[in-house]
Image 1 (cartoon, rainbow, N blue to C red):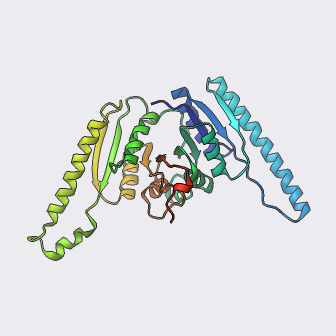
Image 2: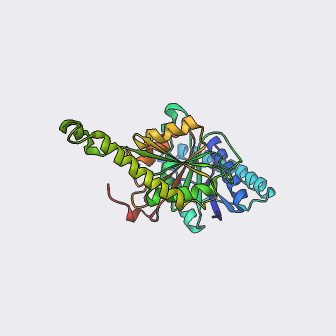
Image 3: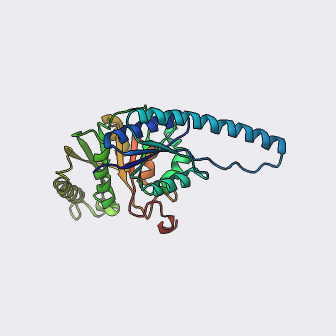
Length: 307
């Protein structure tokens, strides 16, 4: 499945440059159109006329510099044979980028983020967060060094839901041809299983609960491998006990993966990044880029559950 239109959030920061490079590589790989989106936020009103004038001059100068650099980037990408254009809508970045994505029927938004190690992983950034909340399509949070190559070691977080299966399908679009895809399922014992020890092993053996959970996961995994046998990528399924977020992020770090893919249900979406949610935890703590495969109602905040 080919990508036809890719958007990249664009300014003149290093994370943005990395995101544009990644988006350009994907556009070249798929023969897709690339749209660089530089959202121009409205400055808050300032009563002091001198301060307002000086701020306006600085803002205008910065806007000219951003336009100059992005124009040069567009010319460079067009010289490489990539169909590229610039959009500069005015308004809140998250909402305006999402609107441009709708207008272009984009398949993917690529956004850069600050921080890639340690505590700085928490610093996703307000713009990236807003785009994740409003996006009508998949979002690739580009993290780490710039790369003009497809992803070579992708890891897909799998809970066997339609959303996670969508993430697996969409990962194949971003991966290097024939690259193996690791599928990781983090399993946990049922919430009430702690009661087994209370009732006694002979009456309610803990091992039976564990075996039943593992066997169910194995059965679902075998069906998944059969269902996606024609994906064009070798698949390997790994079942690991533990809470999803640490299992996924630790596996990515230990295995040297360059992409984590995770599905989200559109109706739950990113209207608010709920503390403790698997998607939020993975995005904030991942040591590499993250693909967020949105659901059918992505970006439609009217259909989000109230929280």
